[in-house]
Image (cartoon, rainbow, N blue to C red; front, side, top):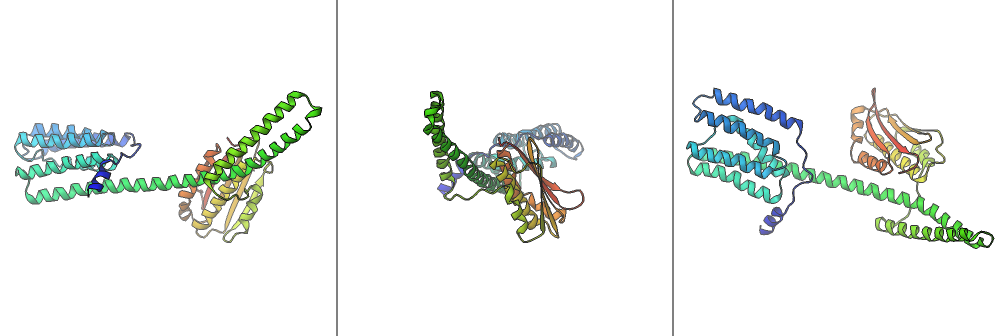
Length: 369
């Protein structure tokens, strides 16, 4: 139990907390008039002016519930507790105070571990004090504990679900970066090896060349060897096997797999693309075709179109399946595709077609950034 409390106490806040949204102001704009109107029309409301001021003023704490969750909980429940002592009873009694549950939720969604523990003591302490002073019956106090605990549990559940999803997203990005590093290694290693061989040949023939050329060849040789060594060291940390890098020429292999027919259409000069770009186009098309076969129900045809111009390469993968079913492609597979395209300075997006089916579009610069 002690270890559990220690781990909770040292748990950091989720980072970053979201900024204040427009609907936070809309919520305040609605609740403040509700608090005023309710304070004016409720019968037998004790300390009516004070009740209206307290309720309307505490609504403003919603604006800082994410950035300062503990402070807002302390202010709201502290003011309610002090007002109850001044008024000599459970005060204020306006129904609009149900918004305090949003503060409790935000505390366990966005607060640190120590903020959660301290805020929980403040919240339960306020309810317990009201019960001890006789402002609440035992049944009301127990009901309040249950409702507050439910808000805390819901906030914690959303917090840990968000954290779990973020870990999954980070894992997808890490795997995509690893695969891209492998592709880049296979490509760069080939060209750098050729550069080293050419430099060594230039050194061997330097007797017929000026001395400046000999010096330049020595520099090329040294830089090539250093680049190869650094590249091999980096990739050794990422993987233990080297596999051939696929490219544009391998897109036809997508049509040989089982499932809906795949038609590949290549337009423009796609034979002289840099290998990193060609490998990325293949990987993006492969992932898009796999997603279409997996999610596009009743699909009969998948069209893969690659068009290259002087500055960019455009990829389009379109299926004719049920649009609603194909929406499943917007998951972790698409996140990995966006990550791969972004690392090369490009973009990738997906969405339903106007009639039926789903289309993935990617644009990569002809020279990878």
